[in-house]
Image 1 (cartoon, rainbow, N blue to C red):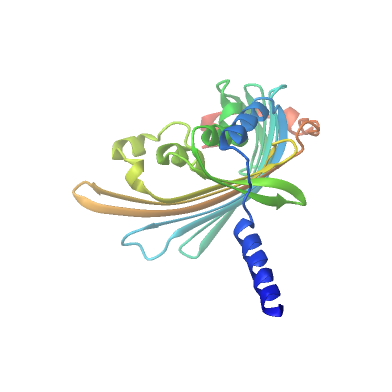
Image 2: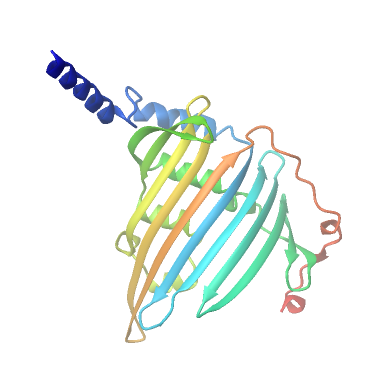
Length: 272
């Protein structure tokens, strides 16, 4: 009897181990459909971001490491945005720290210049808000990608679905590298991202109750190998980004600082 009882307990434990982290009876189509509906109605949100990117070139004795962290507040309905970023670049034992403060009001960008600690402003195309809307780009990627897995998870004590995403390599490259339009030099290389992107990973936490995106992790390893001017060229890129989202619906008011209201119109000659 005792032996039977122990065997039964072992079977129960094994059963829960198998089920651990898995979500039963949640169709992927339903997850996708709910995400589409919710994402289309997100007008305001806040986010935090962390990024680390290491690039190394064959033949060079040291790699370049860029680490950044920051936050943003997005008000799509009123066409307002605030972005604050700290960037630390390290290369050949030299480091450079940069802090940027950006406000976007419709088609006007206000930027704090580190050069002289003054604010400047300039006009940009109307799609600038979209290009800085990280959540929108990530959700668009999810909608066109394969959902590999659905598990149960949590974020800051909020019950979540944890989605494993398998995106198209070309689309993933553009999102993680924040490449709206291909750089002329990249066009010259004529890269095939299906071969360039060697490894990628994308995970998304969404709240169970309202299907709000809560956290997104993206990681990629890419290898660029080309012959440039009859010489071999090889670059390895490792990048990881973490976004966390909050303040849906109840975003704080985005107002220009008093100093930014006195911003000078950007002049390229003065800037140089």
